[in-house]
Length: 197
Image (cartoon, rainbow, N blue to C red; front, side, top):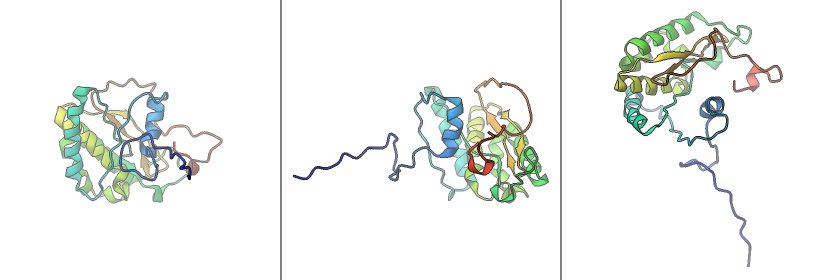
């Protein structure tokens, strides 16, 4: 009789058959928030084929999970254009980056239910040449609109000209470790283009 080797099964739920696991957009945030990895995580895929309103509405629907103690985390960057990075401008921002980020902030704080309209902003295509980093913002906006709570800037600053590090929280009352503009310090052993910081 031929022995069959036991195949290790992935420890996540989903149709992910190639054992990709948690995407860097999730784990690179969660590793800092929950370093012991002692919380269950359910990662949802982003369907970039859907219009922005779909993502806003999904965030509103997900808001009901808070009653069960579920934390909704939308990981990305408000502005994320790797094609335009200027490695020499560590804490800088191009004009189009600032314009889009500041407008997104105004919408998020004053009228999050209208955040889907950000895709009509003149700088959207430079700010989000691919949508996967921008769309998570719409989940948080939908959540805020559904709960009636005002988003608050949790992390702020620019990096490398073409990235905005803006991060919003809604109803978390997260404590900040200190104020300071700019990007997170880069480790000296790893070049920025080879890291996921």
